[in-house]
Image (cartoon, rainbow, N blue to C red; front, side, top):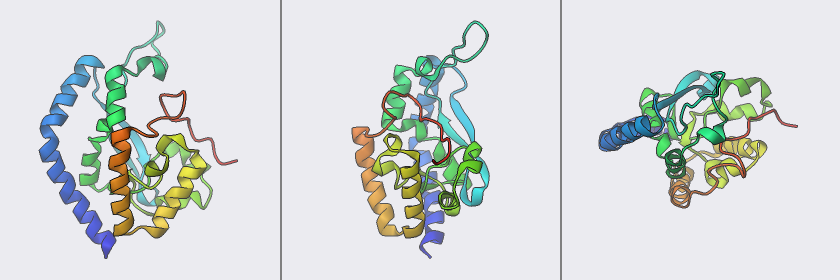
Amino acid sequence: MYQACKGKGDIAIALVLLAIFSPVLLVLGVLIAIINGRPIIFKQVRVGEGEKLFTIYKFCTMNHMKDSEGNLLPDDQRLTLFGKILRKTSLDELPQLWNIVKGDMAFIGPRPLRDAYLPLYSDEQRKRHNVKPGITGWAQVNGRNAISWEEKFRLDVHYTQHRSFRLDMKILVLTVQKVLFAHGVSQAGQVTVEKFQGSK
């Protein structure tokens, strides 16, 4: 019963937030276009509930500079100061409100990952796809990108097996704290998360 209400509630809240934050989205879009260049929206195929594929939306936090051969420069050279601020404040995640409206995502759930990882999961790890992915989740408030892939997946599966209104509220409160203090935004010494290579 809670899950059915949660889905409808997420969509309703996302619509309200889109209306409220529309001026912010517009301003951020203009600033990104000026500072980082176009496109301003990052799109990537991710895995959702039941391993259904969908396109996720985020604000671009890197510029699109290329080398003399036309290849994009390394991530650490393209991540701008403005992009760092967007990541630190999680403002780059705002376009995912549209993913919630579309029904691809929820506010709370395991973070959706790339489809390239599908063949690498163990049977236990695949259980993270038993629920809709979220903008934030149990793994995000327990280390975010600063913990190992194996620990993230363990926390994700734990959420799918123990999800409840009480746990969701706890995650919501902890998420606000994490965003305010920018804990675990990235792995030490890296601007992007190291790719999952499969569990050892």
